Image (cartoon, rainbow, N blue to C red; front, top):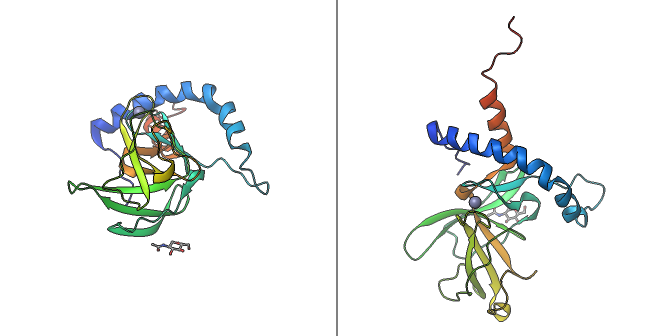
Length: 193
Ligand SMILES: *[C@@H]1O[C@H](CO)[C@@H](O)[C@H](O)[C@H]1NC(C)=O
Ligand SMILES: [Zn+2]
């Protein structure tokens, strides 16, 4: 159960695409994220860990700071693994069609505003769910969960009692993207004169 990176031309394409997004994103979001995470600063620790971005378009999906360990009683496999530079609970969940997803849970995420909550086939008893789609490109990122009592039609996103499930193969840690970009650029040998 390890992060899989695309190989070959697919990888190259996404690198090129993300490199453009990056140069753009850095100017645009650096300041806003600083204020957003300010309230989480605890004891002078460096708090901004890593963005988890949509693997399809590079939009922010979540911050590794907010990854939690919400165990599903229906998990086929649950194990603590080192991801995003820390120990996190990784689970394998199966849907009624037999599709399996390797996931982490998160207190916060960025999803598109969609539809109504579903109460059946839930991986977390007592919680209703809906899909979490990328706010920019609508790619599937995971699911949102909310206690049934508060999962009303006018509650578009989870409250603080809810949480998010993020599919690892649908996101990529930004630090990983940066190191991929760096390695993609190294072939230009410097200073051979
Ligand atoms: C993961 O680690 C936490 C904290 O150390 C522990 O309570 C939990 O049982 C572990 N979960 C698994 C599935 O190993
Ligand atoms: Zn996207």
